[in-house]
Image (cartoon, rainbow, N blue to C red):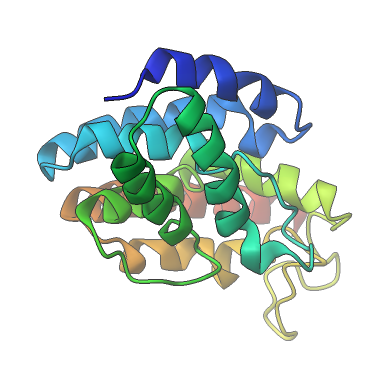
Length: 209
């Protein structure tokens, strides 16, 4: 079994230097916390799951990059070297590699293991709720999007465009995530967080319309 503490020491500076608060080490720690809870309920192998969580975003590819499709594979490749340095066996590295590749929302792969299923759910959960609102705004700002369309904020008469307007992303993607959860625990928590986000949008509507 590899040395998780050494892995964390190797990984943390990479996250802290990427300049993206949506994918910094605090994101990793939140997903780890969720994964420990969901993983225990789902009887996941934490010796595979938790290293995968720590390294799943070790390569940070912007949402609007042409390389976005290969982001999880790039992360898995870099993770393999870190895992090797942290003393993980080739067998464990192969399993962790697969979990990292399969976590990607963009790829839309069905999980082949419970560890992949849990990481998919927990990574999605961190995109919802209060922290999800903060992350959506951060992502929109980095993509030079406006908060909303002034003339039609809620896209009543226009097509949504979440590359141009941040709150369009709520309906375009985030509200759909509960239905994509693999685990019952993930689905219940996702629904709670989406309800919170809808309350935020209702308040925003009161303030701007």
